[in-house]
Image (cartoon, rainbow, N blue to C red):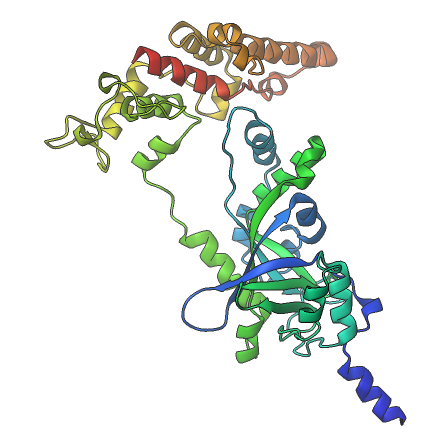
Length: 416
């Protein structure tokens, strides 16, 4: 065989498996959107370990000036928000049911220097050696039947560095992976959820086995049809759509969903026909839905309704829970903090309920939360001695276990 033939044979085999830096091998279901066959998605479920190994955060995007800067700034990971998700949601024992919607991940080509590639390399790797390497890394490597099936199918990706094998049309099963040196998998929606899951794993190793639904987005087919469309341009459009087309819920819906606002929780108790454990309430313990305006956009309601969600919220907000901590400044105003604690203890009997109920032993009382707050301020004052500035002390915020609001709601429900 001549040198030229050897060259062409080597080219036909694609990438040398020794050069591969494969991601984990994922079982996926192919999805998409709309009528045109262009934007392809892959639906899967990843463990937190896999997410940590293969998925990239926004700091990669911020280096590329092709992205809208305002959106990047708005979507930067907020450490305080992430820590709140970890402590008060994921690791909290206050909820029996927890769920995150799917994280959206873009598959973007990268250059050897680590930047996003401006174009795809439309020379897919079709070599048997690469296919064998993928099978060997997959969980199916010891399955003889799968081996025989896999040996007969080819990589359907149209670009180098990405691998997609349709293993069963009957069961709608496929295999997805990519070369980490040639592709980034970048979160474009759900970075706070992802960071919170990874941080939860560092605090509780059991979360290494936790799972999260994901949607991988691939625009290579679209770019293959429109060679003037760069990967960045295509994903930028998707990115903006995700972050601008989503509309916030209306005020009524927010009141009915908010579990961090005491006035909202009281309204929910007034109109809810079942208890937290699913038992039906006595008819005299709630306002029947036929009598409540659920869609009103003002405090006025019309017959046959006798009241509305917004009206109930306004009454409770004005007459019962006006001393709640709503703004960040409220959390550093000692007088407001004390009013808030008095409200929850004098009206809703929160601390007494926590102390008397063995099932609530892991909930910190408001009294203890306040002592911790004062202790932190005093410790700061001692560290700085007489030179401490008031703004330093004011930067210390009163924090409390949000489950105390659930205790308040339960007691409100009993007295309702």
